[in-house]
Length: 236
Image (tube, rainbow, N blue to C red):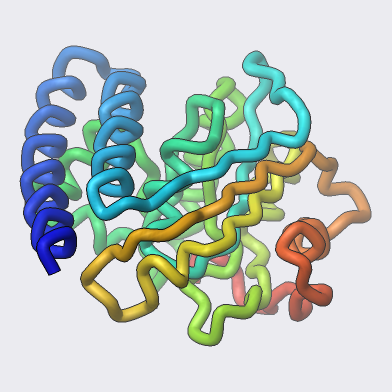
């Protein structure tokens, strides 16, 4: 109970201070890189206080001079903090537009130049994906959850098309990322993070030509092949 209380307090305090710090960093550094560094520190605090141990396995060294489209599975809010800590590259999340409306937190994301998508507006969503492609072509990696939302049953869900189109349009390789254990430490609907171990397995970069990243993530999770790619675009 005490650890849960400390975890909640640290989350609130770290998020408020981190958001204010991000706004300051964003004013100093328009690239958003300082905000990303602060987000990594924020994530370590959020995971560390409740006792979440993070094991990271990067299967091959990534070329720091190349941008990638990272595609993690999504089972818990913990995945976001795990990705911030685990992925050894400068990147920006592609996030739903609703997050941008959260006072302080949303402003901090904007200061970090994260990319927001309005899934209810196909035209606006397409423009956001075009902006993401331009960022990638300029050397900026991005992270997108290809399932579109957190899994409800713990199994890897169908992958939507947006991330694949983004990789193809920008000419970037896809890096599959398998996250295990995040659902155990923070189940869907829970506001508390429990102590536990989370493993992040960063796979080898793969070309989009003739391959499905869902197969690779499923393999890394030790699951059967994921459901077919959803017919609805990821931005919807």
